[in-house]
Length: 60
Image (tube, rainbow, N blue to C red; front, side, top):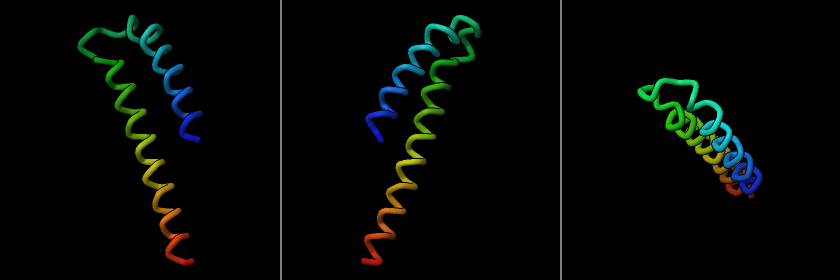
């Protein structure tokens, strides 16, 4: 799962850098925003998966 996320992430950020960055003024820091959004989403998902796994382990 994480490997697929990594591959998609690299592709998406490459497209963002080549396609989106030229469309926005530099002060928007659009690439950094994309990176930040990805970080927040992925870390949220990993935390959620960890909590679910931890709950299952506690029941065992």
